[in-house]
Image 1 (tube, helix red, strand yellow):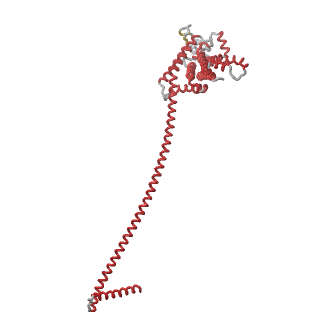
Image 2: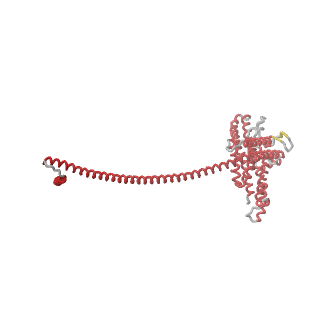
Image 3: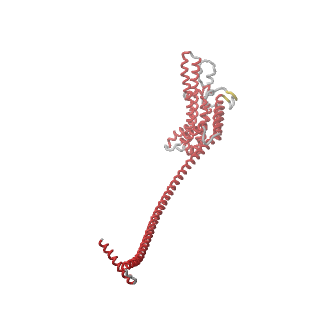
Length: 186
Length: 263
């Protein structure tokens, strides 16, 4: 059915397809007015508002996520910084402790060595003194004993102390000399 | 369609334009004459408004199913028609009107396949004319608002870039095409699509009815074919109902865009 047929039907037919009746226009306009009012004044603004709200919320969410990410990154950097500082400090402390320990050990060792030397020296000195004393005592005792023994053997009293002493000394000297020669021969 | 099922049993019911001019129910002869077509329109209006108001009343930030479906439609008009054709700059101003036009035209179209209604509210010239007048007003107002009254007329009737003698033939063409043919084609395109769709459906179902119940036994099998065709055309009409609403609003958007942008 092309346009000319429709128009022809309109002009002379019973059904004016393209010629609107007044009531047709009126009711169409009324229906559209109701739709336009209800949707335009109420429904569409509601949906538009919700759409805008949703857009705003999504944008806010995205921004928040970005901020959180940036914050996390900053925190990570800070943490790493702190960790590095802590590590450096720990290493520093360890080094100084080690140095100190070495120093303490060295000092202690030096002190101990000095003490040992001192003790050794004192002991040596004591030994020398005691030997000296022993030698003196021994000499006197041996002298007396030998004199008594000799007087008993010889029957002669060697009461004269000077002589006695001289005899003993001579005897001892001879003794020492003989001991010396024996040692040399050995 | 009701006529087809009237049970007259008087042979084959030929689809005619009579379906679009039913007798009056109330107020015959007044400007408020109310007939079957008007009833269909009022029903379509009622359903559309009810659905939108109910869904809008309980609309939430996180949409449910009904709200999701409605938002899908609204997004379709806003994004695929208004923003794409007119551009985002002035889209917000034009979206409500174009959305309402789309929904109203679709509601009037879809009654053509709703059982018991079976006729498009836009199948009689009154509704297409009202829509075309609104589209006409919309693109003229948009043009005047964007370029001023004289500026709009100059850009619409004297497109720049042609030597002046051409205006002798170009300007009358532009007058006719912009201010006469645009609204006329909008209205007639919608009308004849709906009328033709209705006639096709009536033809298929009236033939099925006739073949099954009244024709000779040998022809009954053909009724299956006409029934299948009727089903196919029903599906097709759903598509056409959406498509015509889309085309109407799309062209209105194009006209608005042409008015806003100087040639």
